Length: 83
Image (cartoon, rainbow, N blue to C red; front, top):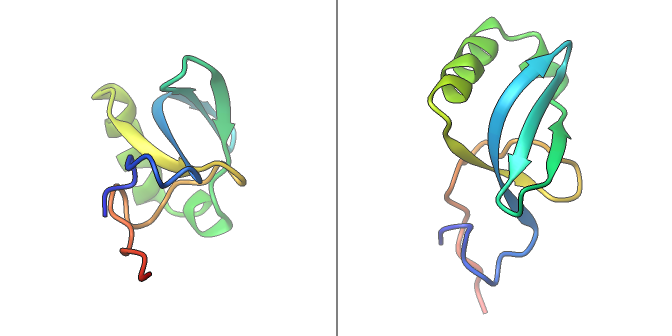
């Protein structure tokens, strides 16, 4: 299932626009500006920050959790919900 499915209301679509210290500034698809907080593992990973700079430079949109404003490891795909 793709997370921009209307049933998946626990995610936000954001475009990363910059970072300072350990906060990442992003713009939501609704036009609001928010901060994303990397996990401890991400904060200490130099490849994470290199990838982040590439994502910012290419103006890519990413999913984050609404509650904690964290990046999602599975990117745009989430497991399907069994009913």
